[in-house]
Each structure stands twice: as C-alpha cells, then as structure tokens.
Length: 301
Image (cartoon, rainbow, N blue to C red; front, side, top):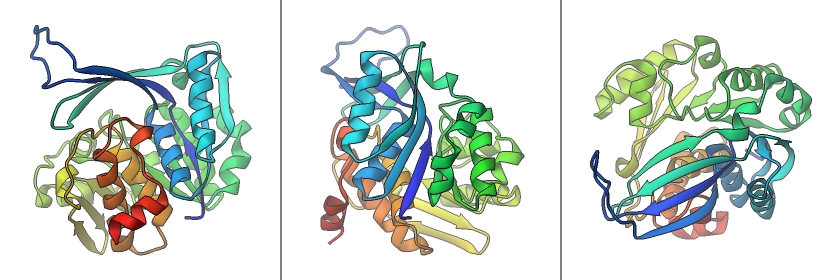
C-alpha cells in the first residue's frame, strides 16, 4: 500500500521490566521502569511511517504534555497528525509488565481515546478518502470503528482490523466490512468462541470469520510465525529466529508491515511482516522497537 490512515488509540506506556510475572497477592521488585510513546493505533501509524508508507492518524489525546509527546513522536516518523484531536480528558495510558522472556501483560486506561466519536470520523473523512487503506484496532469505541469502516468501504478503500483488545464476538456488520482481520491466537478464540491452539484449530476458527464476510484472516502466532486463511486455502509462514526481549509492539509492527508491503501477494507480505516483527521483539519499548524499511530489507537479505 502506498498510503494508509489509522483510526485508533494513542497512549503513554509505562513499561516495567521484571524477571517474572508476580503471582496473585505477591509483591516483587522490578528491574526498571521506562516511559514510551504507545497505543495500538499510534504504534501502527508510527510503524507505517517508518516503513515508508504515507500515513495519517485519526485519534484523540489530552491537552497535556503526554499528548504533545505522542504527537511529536508520530510526526518524527512522517505521520500526518492533523486528525489527532485534543480533549479535556487526559491522554490514554498503558501499564505494561515484561518478563525476562519478553512476554508481556498490558492494562489500559483509555482516557481521551474513548472520546473519539463517529462525528469526529465524519469531520476527518477527507483523510480516509485520500488513503489507499484504513487500519483500525479496538482501543477506541466500537461505534467509531464501525463508522470509519463504513466510510472507508463506501470510498472503495481496503479495510484492515486488528481486533485488540478482543471483547468477544464482533458485530457481523463490522466483519463484513473487513478485507483483513489480524487476531493473535487468544483474540481469535475470543472472537469465535473456538479453541485456537493448533494450526488446525486456528484454521477452523478463522473459517467462521470468513463465513461472516471477512476477506482474509491473518493470525499472528508469536514464535510460530503467522497463518493466513483465505476462502482458497491457508499459508503458514515461519518466523526468523531472534532472541526476544520485549513483545509489546510485535503485533502492531506485524500489522503495519503487512499493510505497507501488501500488493496482492500473501507470502511476500507475510515474510516481510514476520521480519519486521522479529526485529521489534529483539528490542525494548513499543514505538522505540519498530524498525525502518531499510532495516527490514537488510534483515531479510
């Protein structure tokens, strides 16, 4: 894709590095605390910009220093932030714990993200109409996601949904508007009510989403790579081998890399997305871990 618009969240991330996750009722010491620009929407917009895709962001932040920081960081990747609105509510925040294996758990405080409305989408519709692709997540209100998808589909744009955090089954009206949906195994299970532990289970669950109107289901499998399921079959793409230190932005980087490299061929786009995500998990931070297009090309070669 030559251009994309992202409708989604912008958060300030508080990332806590631990040796292991605490048990219920247990107090443990952290190794470090870092503050990083984040939010699934902003992460994907930043990654798209870094990977050479002309990108605009539609979202909401507070009238605070955190909002200023998030906008500046997106702009540093070449992202058009004219669609980022300022609100009286504070900028969204995420609290992330990362263990020594690089696995993470995330708690989100929505803040200004949940003030983004369908009326805001209508106000910024020119950004959607000017892009080749709309990329969305579920850290803003569902009615806003649906409004953006309807507008993009009516304008003939490619619609990509990263269904995180997955609330359970999604409205079929939304699924019918999605050319691509990219859950991980846990999200796929929540979306379908089916197990998604093995390739066979993932394919069976993905096919139920295809039956509801989704064009292609992309399942990110972490260390097992990625699985694409279409009405014509499936493709499993193993990942490159790297030492994982922080998986916070892996899914967001995968989504953005796939979109930036999509030209109709599944295998090349999956290979590129796997490579970008592999680089991201080998570094700490959300947006700080996202590679440039040149880094991904060098890694593949």
